[in-house]
Image 1 (cartoon, helix red, strand yellow):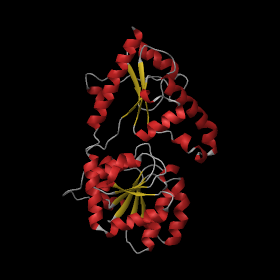
Image 2 (cartoon, rainbow, N blue to C red):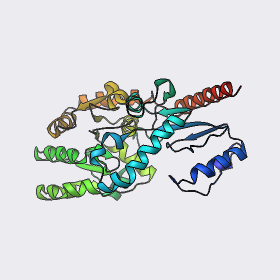
Image 3 (cartoon, rainbow, N blue to C red):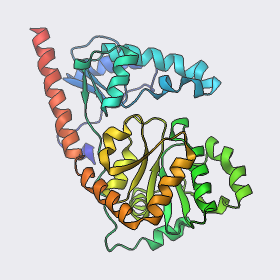
Image 4 (cartoon, helix red, strand yellow):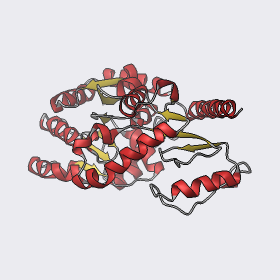
Length: 332
């Protein structure tokens, strides 16, 4: 779609991510087509000086923060490369964009970057995330075996997501007599395998729905149909699912740490992610108190309007203009 626009051009390079050839091939391309700015939405840029200004986006520094939970193979093969590359590119880049004040603090603390080199630009939910209204989601929910009411988790299976804590809280809620499902929009993986025997013992395995990959259209309906979104994470660089749920007027239960208080504000019910009993308690509060549920849903819906891709793009363009102007002054 973008390549059909007159001001958009796709330039393919003969290299793979993290390959040493990137540092040779990309500068050659930049010098050939006279690019003003190279913006890497990841953090990889060539470490060879060119006339092109460079900007990287760093969403978070989770491998540093949860280093002890990386598998031995990743500690041996991935982390040394990741650490070296991100430290060098953070110093080499003209500017860094990140997605929250919390991530900015981590970048300053861990990578030694000065605050004036960082701009915080929030992410947003796309326009498909909206309240259900008169739309009937039955066909979509039936296809995945989802029954309402249900609790929702959306994300990858990584340590920081606290999947065992979510499952333990769900078991507590069910054992207290509340008939809800837990729907997890994720792929099968390590952490779910660890809790599967517990769910079997409790007779609740069939009440935890693992959707696997879903289409974007289906995801809209699943979000908007949820009773509550759960994000009791140990760490988030931003926490985009919170904004997506809030835009659907779905209340959110979030952890009281990392970027989540910054992003969610007074629109979420906060929990200590180390306390499964507190997560369960918050779920039961929203299941049993319709006024509270509606209050948090409305607060979240109003707060979600603070985040828009239009603002994200506008703020990013301002960074581009600033970096180009600074590069021009240096070259005078």
